[in-house]
Image (cartoon, rainbow over all chains, first blue to last red; front, side, top):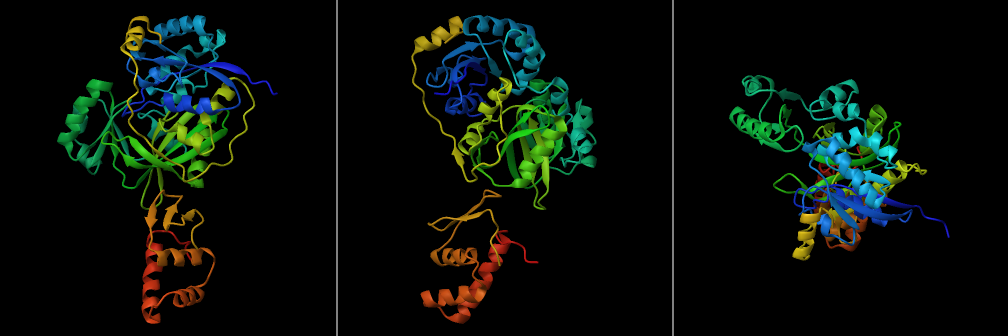
Length: 349
Length: 82
């Protein structure tokens, strides 16, 4: 019988809630891979992240310090976890934590802990503040964008944009504003919550389409699966979606990976206009919450990421099954208060 | 007339456009016509097939087919004709 490698893989974003992180979908995908035996370590910021209590998916969960505590605290905690678990690979899945993980990735490597992450420059070039510059350089369409550094920048906004516009936080959250007064309200809210700048983006009519993919860091696309959201919650999150068979989207992903030499998982958010033009709205530098759907459609991108990170041979995927559909649901996971108490007091479950 | 390649028609009469994610449900006659188009039948063959199977006035069928094809084009389900 062929020997299967055994790895201990740590995964963040176990918050499988109404605004879900992708950790549980990543783990579900990893568990389905028959290429290796895995021990899964959950890394959790809060004691109520549902994934920590899903013992059929996650073997052990450790609490880690919030991203605002900085990369040194994160490193200390991960090295402690490493002494207990002997980690082989980490998949971070939150936008806000990525910089810290990238900063310490070389040190982690010295301890035998691998990652598959973009570098800091890649991350910065593609964040919401710089995406329009990147798209202009690489001849990709993007909605008109303006960065607001202060409330005074709103004064002349109606001369530059037709309303409504989207008002976006630096990391998360977006609101549609119908006039300058609403922009002012959302500017205050988002700048307080996520800092400056606040981003104004032209509102484009059309169909929203997302592509989840994996880049090998050398300009090659390992796989990409397009999906259209069929039902969107009042928080703007996809609650159901269907996999599309659209070669132009996969070609766009190839072009994106080639231009960026992207390393790791990513999600491209597009709007397809009525004139059939693809506009890139956002690049999320990690796997999306619906990543398990790519596995169901025939491309287990999280497992491919582990193989890449562990220097195993990985052949690019050449197809997927269109028409696979996901419907998210709510479910009460029953546990015991002692589990919560243990996690809260010991930081380990 | 040709249906776009990413269009799937289920036995229960639902069209799924794999390129856009849109779905449409059809009545049995519409399903029959679409399956005939998919089987590369020309317009005369489709007309004959429907007249043989259903009790329908030929003039009425002509008009309804014209509307149906226009609707399929509007939904972007047919390849554009050169």
